[in-house]
Amino acid sequence: MIDSQEVVMRGRSSLYLPIEGVGYERAVNESQAELEILELISQEKVTTTWIVGIYVDGELVSPEGILVSFSLTEHELVSVSEFKIDPVQETLYGIATLVGCFFLLIAVPMMVYFAGIAKARLDEENRLDDPAPSE
Image (cartoon, rainbow, N blue to C red):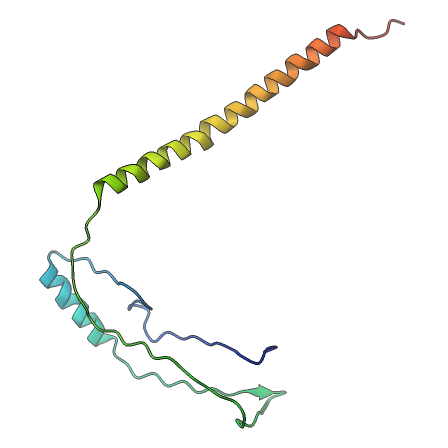
């Protein structure tokens, strides 16, 4: 059911090509990767036709006053380059992950444990300071 005046529909013509941005391919070298990418693009070239109809209570609504627009995405190979990892950045990410895991898995339970010990000690001191009334 459509409640607003504008509706956006999206469709994909290929599940193997990236929607936008950068794609990736695993290969032995750059020339092999380029060949595999060009082959993938040529295999996924298809003509897609969309038929849009608006129905109210099972009857087709007149298309007068209805504007349908679309955007087209074309896939083309711009460049092929080897993916490189920055060792400094990956080291910093690894240390941050280690510290975060340490805090979540050790520090938080230890704080809960020591808070429970402190509460038990306070309860014991209060019990000793105010003994139970004798009968």
